[in-house]
Length: 289
Ligand code: ATR
Picture 1 (tube, protein in one colour):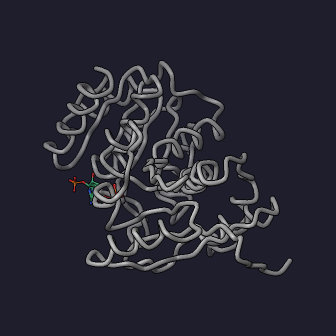
Picture 2 (cartoon, helix red, strand yellow):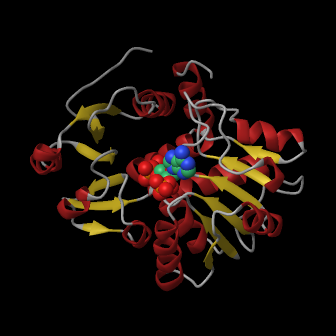
């Protein structure tokens, strides 16, 4: 089917700088095409100094909304009318909807992780103990969302301990008192992971070109643990391979990428996202690492 654009086409975009290679346009456009929705997703490079002008301009055009990526996920909050509770606590917005002249910001990164976990393992978040490695933007989105969704405990460990304390304190005071910091000490990490049901690596450790690095030592892993990595290049990180070798369930980072987009699609269109089509689009656009 060819591309058909007319004056009624609802536009959606990705705002960031530099954009480089992104899976979002092919993933979203494949989904629109599959369902016959008259939408078009465009990559829009915008620098910091022009962000406000571009956002104002989009709100005067036929845009249903947009995604925001690096470096604007925090600053965008100054330019939109409403921010949903979860995004406000995470402190970053990756999706904006435009409806009847009102812009609303959401964060679907953490929800994308949760849905990926549920799809991959059948496990729910509720009453589970999570060990989260890292305290950057992705860890914030995942940690806050897990707390919102009823996780029993969220144990956070990070190279820079101060950032782990800030995140745990925010979860405890702004969502629910369920988070603790684990010092980056092998024995303390091992004991904490033994107590956990699900380990999540949110750091870039193990990502190409550093494929031979592990965010936690092998001794920390055990067979009854589910191990999730948000790194998707390579899909089978050294962490996931080590976990698989001892019989753990593993979840790779591609699911979070697709499901955060699927949740954005749902916000813009109000339609159930065709997740399989979105996975296929990402896989055919990647070099299948
Ligand atoms: P993102 O938005 O993807 O989460 P980020 O905000 O830059 O990216 O966060 C990166 C995370 O990976 C941080 O937790 C970082 O640890 P620090 O807070 O100590 O910087 C972690 N990280 C990156 N490289 C790391 C490494 N080589 N060893 C351990 N942790 C690392």
